[in-house]
Image (cartoon, rainbow, N blue to C red; front, side, top):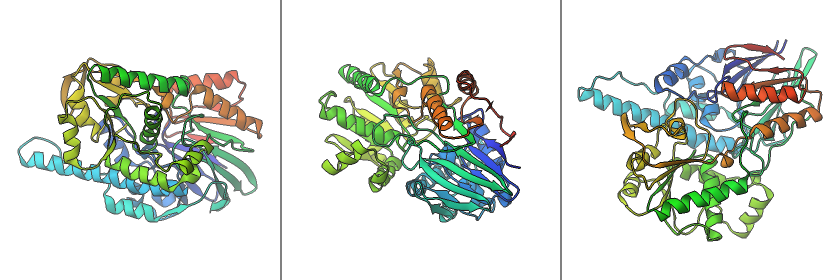
Amino acid sequence: MIELEMAGGAGTVTGSKYILRTRRATVLLDCGLFQGRRKESFERNRAMPVDASEITSVVLSHAHLDHSGALPILWQRGYRGPIYVTPATRDLCAPMLEDSAQIQMADARHIDKLIARGVELDPVTPLYTTDEVVGALELMIALPYHRSQVVAPGITLTFLDAGHVLGSAIVVLEIDDEGERTRLAFTGDLGHRGLPILRDPEVAQGAHCLLIESTYGDRLHAPYEETVDALAATITRTIERGGKVVIPAFALERAQELIFTLQQLRTARRLPRVPVYVDSPLTVKVTDVFRLHPECYDRETFAQLHRDQSLFDFPGLTYVSDVEASKAIDEDPQPMIIIAGSGMCEGGRVLHHLKANIEDPRATVLIVGFQAEHTLGRRLVEKRRDVKIFGVMRPRHADVVSLNGLSAHADQRGLVEYAEAVRDRGPLRQVILVHGEEEPRRALADKLAAARFPTVALPAVGERVRI
């Protein structure tokens, strides 16, 4: 018997955890943090619906926290088995998990200070500290793309390039469960074809079951060239009226793609010559990891790397780590571009820049990635008249522009075409849709049904699916 349990990331785009069970082994695919309303997120992450003593091994698709961020909790619960990752994912998890722990610890200290001053608040305990991060990192085993490895009794793993973020992988598992043989392909987050820097996703061969994400299952991305044109036009329009452009961006991939694209636009003289600040210590560390892994680049980017080593730098670009330098950005009245974390505006330095600019009608908040339900980023995309920042409702006078063409996720067409390509290359008999909100997931299921896929499942969290 082979089955998959949805321990998270079903009907939502966060908290991905899928438990593969056979008669001889139990493998956890991804171990992500749930993100949403803060109280609910803390409670769901603390609950951790995975029995660490049951897990034979863990396979991680990529380093984004909604896929990797709960690994230190798993270590905290006693897990000491292997965690299989690509080399780039291993290098990225170190700064990203450490940053996650540092933020939690800082939040707890801040709440303790407020309580000491007489503010009536409940104490906050970090989900984990840097000690648990180090413990999880020690368990990681780096496996390059296309190299097969037995990861549990009767289960062999091969990573393919998912083209989503640096080091992201499509997980292919060859399963021999006492003579019952099955090949499972898990996309993790599937990349958007045609974007710069990374290669396009590779197609899994001979899969019987496809476990595929559905983040953008109900929409299409604008062509990359159109998105770049809109990016240049939005920035130019904002600068000409004297405003600042604030871009919330994930430290992994989105920030690097933005820097790379801005460099190209500056070289082509399509942008005003204003300062560009990357205000995120984590982005600085992640960008350093990018420089270490040119093996993940597409041919065009690799060729540019040999012509010019400055893939992520250009005149006028400043990486900011120092807190005082970050504060000085908002004190400077001149127009500028500010790229800051976090991508969904739920923490990090972007909140300070939003606080400083949200009431300025000259400013623009430029959204370039998916925004989950109940996040500040989603409320901005919805163009709410008032938004809460640091606990205070503030009128939104700044313009909000959304450009999904830079998304690192495949859109509906990309997801359907990938599923069709897998079907064309093997005896595909089952598709399971995960990592998507319900409406996009149902829309993708309808498209797959129209394309004559025989079995398309939309399991809920806690549900088990027979493979």
